[in-house]
Image 1: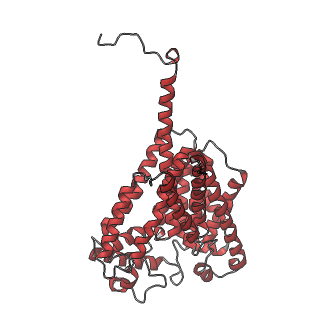
Image 2: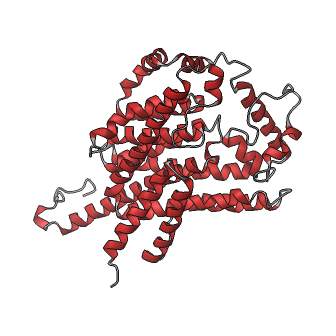
Image 3: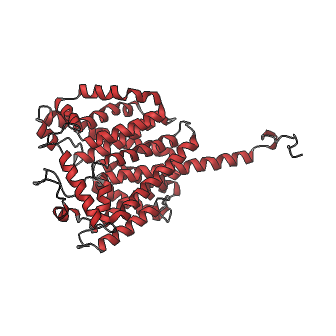
Length: 425
């Protein structure tokens, strides 16, 4: 017995939600469902439907392949080419939620559930391992929740927090009370995570959302920061102060300076195609400028801890421009959608504001960390961008529906054109 189209749509919706939710639990499991969803798209709809960000992504793929082919070891760089598989989240999420945009509620609920569980587990980790830890041990081994690294954990938690706050501020549909109660839990996990780039990203993303919701409430930002500082444990307070008064033997300030200026030297030497994907680590020492004192500060030198310098040094300045083109066009289209709605609360408005907030978080956090290098962060980012385009498509569909409704109204009930003569008459 053939499966009806309605049943096929429901199966595809479930697969898309499961694939997106599993980002926060298991890369492998998420990508299995992503592959299944991509196959089902071809079976059900016979195509992958991309929004217009496909062009910068195609350009980035082309330039990455070219940079890899011209690198000393093209075989080494294949991992970065394989990573383009995760961008299939864009046609999967976009195609499914263009047809079922009202179901975005369930995707956000799923993300909130798994994100809150990860945050709770991270708080348990903090109580068990770090409550009485020294500052050195706290910085070197932070809470991670369900993730493998604290940077990944912080970025994913911020994405969920941005979605929840945007839903609270701008949606015409309420989430269950447990979802809003997860806001302080996720916020506490981000604070105790101790990752300064995430703190910066969170501050800017939340300020954006609050400014668009209640501009005057942004005046409370210094008060909230002061309260967070006073409520935080001693190790977290010391981590906050390290932004301006770092411990040279523990904090990463000097390490980030070393990676940044080394990356600049790489860009100067290879501005067009970079060193090639995955070539940063093996060539790092050859490009360290003389002004960086030796021995190098303690830290990880496998990448450059900055998305702008990383992409330019690895794939050339054109590669970086492709990334910024992709992000910029997504932000521009989301902004256009927000302006069209003129502040009217709706599912579309909350998703569009969440898209902008997540983009702000990625761009701000990317100043101090190669966040898009994490598959989980890249997958989550791709999902949110796709949802933003689905919201924009929903707006277009609603506008066409309104036009159709107007055309079906009885002539007697339509607005009448004035019979007064024109001035030219």
